[in-house]
Image 1 (tube, rainbow, N blue to C red):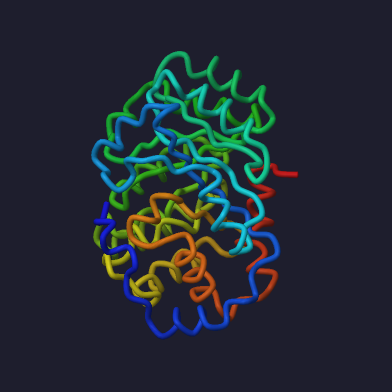
Image 2 (cartoon, rainbow, N blue to C red):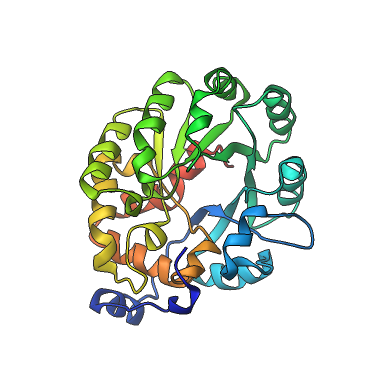
Length: 299
């Protein structure tokens, strides 16, 4: 991750213009990618490599900023806690109440025991999907259990979030093609900064041709731009994602607090508005709320 010391970044003219006239916020913005980090409650082995995240990031601190931006509800995204704490994390986050309206829980679809774990999670109506971070783990795709286990999700009414690096998109595409009845959500626009841009564009287009894959409009300030980014740095990747997936297969996510390493929740919301300026109210509504409500089965 980029050093937190640069989080303010450099706003370009488009950002500054938006900030001056940012009184019009969406009436219903659903954040599909909220992480809560509570070191006193759970263990996060990976955070040892992220000094900017080595403290508590609580719902209260998120909500203080989020509600002023038009965010009305959020889905908690698993935070890769210690494996034996995944079920406890899901139980905790689904018990928080508003604004958390559901959770995407942690799992290991490449290992035995997945079926029982998924069934227990699915018994909680606020568990809307599952995720395990695949990035940097090519051995996962070699598991003989992976496809069989993921195919169990559709009857349970659960989605699966794909978190992969840009150069790993062909692996994700092949996997999603083998599970055509499972709804996959690609996190962070396929992390476009993690590989050659032309290859990322072609691989995203190939993945988007699968009708069972949706893309999460998130992570661009972490993976698609230099540390001191501007809206114009984000625009090529954002435009390509919108072009290949279309407005009906995009959902919005903050990736808070990871977004604070290179910006802030406020800056990412403002950048999103700048990036989609000129789109119709219907298209904006799809990105901000209606697609999420449909895909994650929210009331």
